[in-house]
Image (cartoon, rainbow, N blue to C red; front, side, top):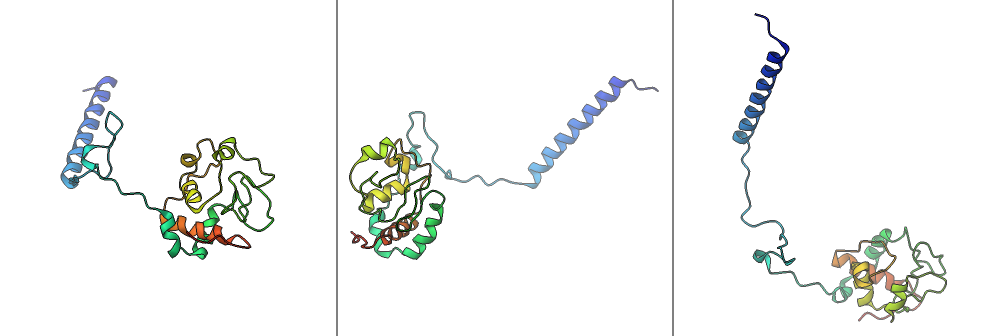
Amino acid sequence: MHFEWYHKFSFGLLIAAWVAFGANFLGHELVHANVPEKPAYAAASKDGGAAKEDKQEAAPVDVVTLLAKADAAKGEKAFGKCKACHTAEKGGKDKVGPNLWDVVGRAKGGHGGFGYSDAIKAKGGDWSFADLGHFLENPKGFVPGTKMGFAGVKKPAELADLLVYLRSLSDSPKPLP
């Protein structure tokens, strides 16, 4: 008997469907998924709030309280993330960001010769440990409109180490709070 092309094509589709069905069946028999009782993360509800199951949130860590245990040597290592845009030596040149020598206690937007964003200039005040901590944790959250494109330091201990290192970049470091 001579098969026409459409018979061969139909037979091929039937074989492919059997193979797909068999592979699916075999996969379900060999691998059993363990569904967790509690979700790994809170899904947002329609009103934008967190899901009702996970109402408890961790209290934010006050980085200033961690400064007493912070290590400037570890902070210098963490500063490696900053070196692409900032210098840290006395009299160092500005790069994409300003030189950070003696930044603790300096006026926000106050390093002469650097073109700060209007947002930083408008923030006002001096760079306290708390303000530097908030800024380095979330630059765009602390100063909306800042030109700084850094995502932030998320680990509180690393942030405290970095702050203590920045404090050391001075002829007369500011006292810890």
